[in-house]
Amino acid sequence: MALVFAGSVGGAAGPAAADQSSVLPTDSYRSHPGGLITRNVYDYAPAVIADGPYRMWWCSQLSGGTVPGDDILYAESPSLGGPFRAPGGGQPLRVFDGTATGWDQHTCDPSVVRVDGTYYMYYGGSRDGSPDLTQIGVASSTNGLQWQRLNQGRPIITPAFEVDRPNRYGAGQPSVVHLDGMFYLLFTDTTASGALDNGAGQFAWRSTDPTFQSGVEVFSATGWQPRTADNDRSFSVLNGFSVDWQYSDVLQAFIVASNGPNSSGTVLEFLDRNDLRIHPHPNGLLPGTWTEGPALVAKPDKHAIVTPQGECGRVPIDVIQSTATAPPHTLGHFGFDLLTGRTCGQLTDAQVAALFNGYGIESAGLPATYITGGRRLQIQELGVYTALTGNRVNVSSQTFHQIPYGASLHTGVPAVRAAGRPAGYLLDDGRLWPVADNRLITANRSPVTTISVQQYDSYPKAPTLRHSWQ
Image (cartoon, rainbow, N blue to C red; front, side, top):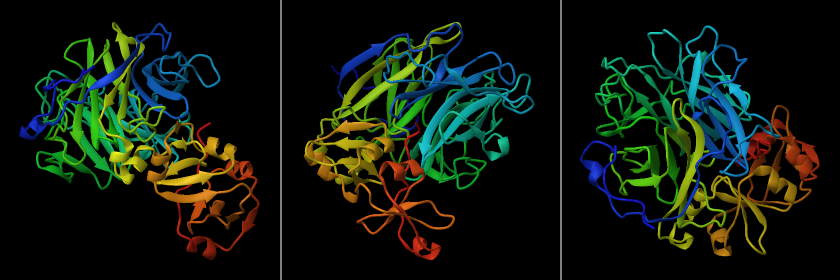
């Protein structure tokens, strides 16, 4: 079926938005309208990543927190149909709540990304009676469960207060993607000059700094520009509230999900990788009831996930959103596959490598392989392979060999270490592969030899190998 249609439903402003090409057909529609979370209070605005199980953070409330107000809860499931439970079973966990005296008494609207073993959670925070309205903060974690506020606990984005509108929400509803070493952030600011009269609009910033306190570029009417007080919220790339986005390595475009024109579907919009004014494909509609905020299921770096069969011609689109109102609750799942019409063989080797980055790939008669840094790390010890990633797919031998070879890690190969440096492997590519967790050394049955710091530092470094979050 072809559920994607031409048109501009809440689309971007500007003439370049009309530069649309082919309609993307779809198939494999799937849904679980409820049952993901069974609770009696509000549950909405989730963030979901595929990281072995599906890991979900969302806005709700549990008694016994630091202060009365919104909390961010966590649960996980092996299936998008749920139920989502705490690790090991049981009721969802409160993993982030408000401060007693700070700006973020209420914490809501999480967006989570994992970069080099660190999770970053962007969230909206507010305080009852505060004239500052909603503001955006960020916290970090090594496991997605215990979080530490960054930027000395201060907000990283505050309302612009450029226009006084009836909608007094402020700056919030962040959504983050990590691409080419930069954090890309979409957010709402109802007080910005670039927002619509009702406060709708999405502003795009990017930076290598996860706190967005340095090196910030903003997307303006003339493209990406260094941030200034005049341009940081002058141009809205999308006209909507409560959106989520991810990056598709196959389409070479951002995919943005937002609440549709009515409660019967979620709008998908496609934004060019370099110029967010350009829509390379017409908008689409994913059928499914919503009451608040879709979450696009994504890889930990917020790139589009891969089908279990390792197909390059399909882009799975799955959203989780609240489906009942007053207040928004009953999280449901809706999805389909976008069909690109291209095989892996029609993609460049770099595109295929980017698509499977972070995955374990398996192909009959070939070594179990972990894709990191856009290259194949072939692994002999099964325990090491399964420890490195929870995301694993089958691929053809042709696809396997399209991804550039990196190195081979054989069982028992010696590791090296130096004072103040992590243990690591010197592999056949001539690079040193640091190991962040010694459980990997143990699993590989590797002896460890001490070398000098000078010798250790002389080797070119490969990506750090990290045990999966479990």
